Image (tube, rainbow, N blue to C red; front, side):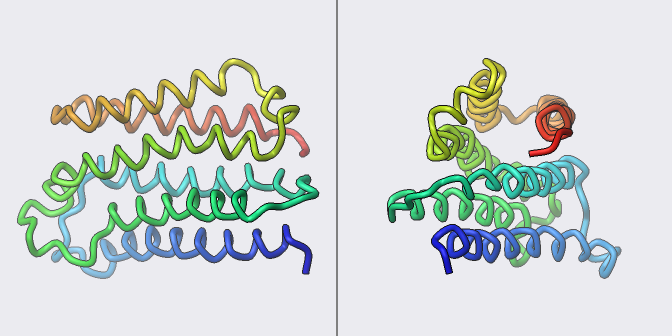
Length: 190
């Protein structure tokens, strides 16, 4: 087995667990419609993280071009994808017994953790892109660093803001932008 196949296998396992958490958590609303109180902003963030997982998996296809692997690169990639697993876990806790308001009260009580970790993913993305090489990094326009830095800063703001309209606007903006970004980047053959 070549090194990339090994890296890809480990990434697939962690990514699969992350997606399974999101899917299992979402299906609970169908399984127990009277027991769980959904909150649309929470569900929108679930969709956004699912979208990010798909984007991440496609983005990592370029790791196949790396000819020499070092353990530090491997460790970074594993830690990077573990952030998505933790984000998925934060969105769907084991139980909501401590949160009588359902997912709405849970989401706002854990928003600092969620947005802190999400903000770190945007910084880590720079390192991930650089691992693929300077030529690959330079291939992206100014939009790439502007996207990551602005998302990072917006996540820091979201940690502090309790306003529900702000959070509604933020998640919608993140989803719309991410869909636009994915389709503009990847609607061509790699």
